[in-house]
Amino acid sequence: MPPARLSISDLHKSFATPVLCGVNMTVKPGEVHGLIGENGAGKSTLMNILCGLLPWDQGKLFLDGASYTPGNAGDALRRGITLAAQELSLIDTLSVAENIFLRRLPARHAVIRYPELLHRAGQLMQRVGMEIADPGTPVSRISLAQRQLTELAKALAFDSRLLILDEPTAALTEPQAQRLHRIIRELAAGGAAVIYISHRLKDVVDVSDTISVLRDGQVVNSAPAGTLTPAAMIRLMSGRASKADTAARGSTVNRGGITLEIDGLASRQLPHPISFCCFAGEIIGIAGLAGSGQAELLQTIFKLHPATRGTVTRRLGAARIRLHSPRQAIELGLGFLPEDRKQQGIFAGQSIRLNLTLPGLQKHAGRCGVIRSSHEHLATEQQLDQLSVKRVDADQHIELLSGGNQQKVLVSRWLHQGADIFLLNEPTRGVDVPTKHFLHDLFRKLAARGRTLVIVSSEIEELMTLCHRILVLSNRKPVKMFNRDEWDYNAILAAAFSEYSAERRH
Image (cartoon, rainbow, N blue to C red; front, side, top):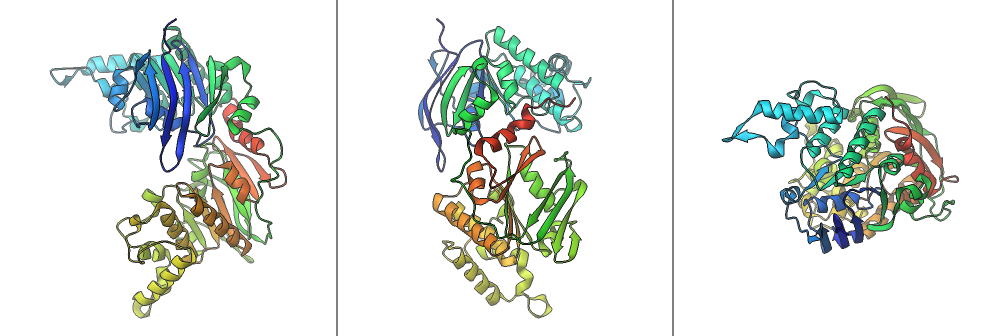
């Protein structure tokens, strides 16, 4: 019997916390192996290790029976492992053909042979069903679906022993997806092994021979695809029986009047209109799989993204004010916490004090608009003490703080500003457990004082613990608003997968 194409034995990987905890998995030659799991289950980390993009801490990898230890992505590629990633790695200023063969451009004497490049790229484009005729078209001028097909053609440009496809049909129509599945079966029939990762559970069942379920960094089940239903896969991913979760409850809501009204809101990133109202004293959760539009929803509400239709209206008593810009949103009491603290949240190289007070700096202005430093310093120290931020002093550079303390400063920014509506995107991601509990307590206290919080989290359990209502987005479409007395972990997870399982629009 030939050896397994890929064998993973007791693989471990930790960052701040363990991500992979003893993964064991086998992929045979000629097999399409589906891999599924919730957000944060460890799928991306595992794929990055296989492709040489990350080292691992413990365990062994074998490729066709030989020890496999890639030092970088080039090593993996030379060993015949190719990845078509969900996060597209295309260069907009290059042509489709140049992107497809960027890692192996046909050249002679260091001169690219463009006729050969265009011919070979055209063959691959035809194979994956790209509708554009000219391989020389710049990537900046093609659609998202065509970009995804370009990424697939890029992966197919190599004679892969193991092809890894991460959400390969996310932007494809049904005919395009069916064509891709035929290509996958042809590759498998030729002896290649394929790892197929997708939120579309029906696609996974249809194209895979075997399906493995990753949960909390471990493979909890591997079985023939024909033996698993979508409902069974959801139960395996969640690790729960389908029953009401009575233990996970937010605090009692003492709901006041409407503070924010979202009416038919849509944008280029969110094509399906979204409507809901936020009330004083309420915590609303936004749930969904990665890439389902949760971050874009908060950004559109805060007016960081322009809306193509619909309105966001701030209610202040009898007054109704339509939001048009982030500056106006801040003036009307909205605060926004981005998902990427390092890139979008903190002002690196600047003091804690400046990071905390900048949106509300006018509060400390004296005559002629001059900032009263002593006044600003006192307010900063009081705010930092209130949230127990560990620091040397308020003039310390913010990047010298731990991630949890940086997050506390960003929340303090909006408390200092006097916000009473908080739009929080993954507010506890990457923080230690004590800080996470501290922030949870803070959010409950803010709601008890009549503030409104809208929280995006990839952890359903976190939302069920904190929130009074949970809106679920699936494939950038609102599918259900769950009330606290009716939600169920598996029902929320099933709703998050629902539009990925539905038939695609042509």
